[in-house]
Structures are given as structure tokens and as C-alpha cells.
Length: 195
Image 1 (cartoon, rainbow, N blue to C red):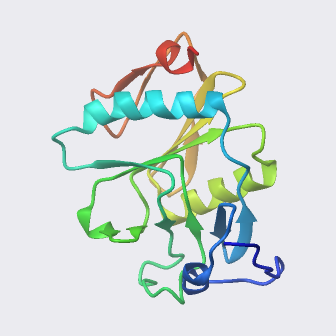
Image 2: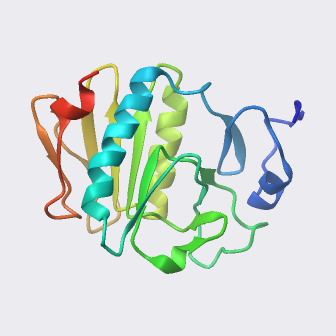
């Protein structure tokens, strides 16, 4: 559809989001509309595909499921917020893993996925990265991978016992990435970053 004019200073809910139809992709973070960067570039798509291949093989025949964008992840601020008019954060991570089947419904995921992966491209803003980091931590996403495509590196954030992210050392293309949450899932970053 065509353009819809929204007041970018107003806060909206998932109920509002469901009524919209845009030419561009948007997310809601704490009720504020965040326009996503234009269609991802070639490097972003290659990295996403390679991670999907490796992770897809790992999760085959397991209870957890891997999803890729576009896929709505609704992150309630309070655990009992489940109504569309209460939810003010809706994101579309590049990849996410959901192990609890009760969090899945026909529209996507409601609640924190077990793992979220965001691939940073030149169009991503520092503000967007900061906002997502904060809502992922606040909503209880156990593990968050920040893939820096230009730098060919990955930083893994893991929630500690008090619900605060602890960052890893940067993993580079010489490293094999592993998850503390999913034993045996190892990803050769040389493969992921090779174009």
C-alpha cells in the first residue's frame, strides 16, 4: 500500500500496528515507531543465509525452532501483558530461536525468544541498537548475538543471574562461535563471513 502518515512522537500498541500496511518495514520499541533500514544488502543476506543453514541443521529434530525475518516478536513489558492493546514493543530480529511452543501463535512469537540474532548493517543506527539491547535485556532474551557485518565479528550478550547482559569478547572470522545455551552448536565464523 501507499504511505501512512504517523505521528512519530506518539506511542502506539500492537493493536495499532496490526492495522497498518507500509511499503517499508517498521518496528515498535516502547510504543515508538522505528523505521528499519531499507532492504538488507548482499553481505547481510549472505550472513543471514549461512547462519540459517548452520543453525537449521543444529535445531533439526529438536524442540526449539529457528525463525528469520520478517517474523513479529512481541515483547511485553510485564509478564501478564498479552493483549494487543497492551503490547508496545514489536521487533523483527534477523534470526531468533524459540524453545517454548506456548510463546508461538499464528502471528509470530509473544514473549522473549531464547536467542535473538541481529545483523548490523550500515543502515542501522546507534539509537536503534541501544533501544533493542535495552528491550531484549528487559524482556528476558537469554542470549543476544550482535553480528557486525562490516567488522566481521560477533559479540554475544548473555543474561546473568540478575537479568543484566554480560558481553563476550568479540569473536572474529578466525573463531568458532558456540552458545552457552545450546551445547554442541558450533558455528565457524570463517564460513559465515566468507563472501
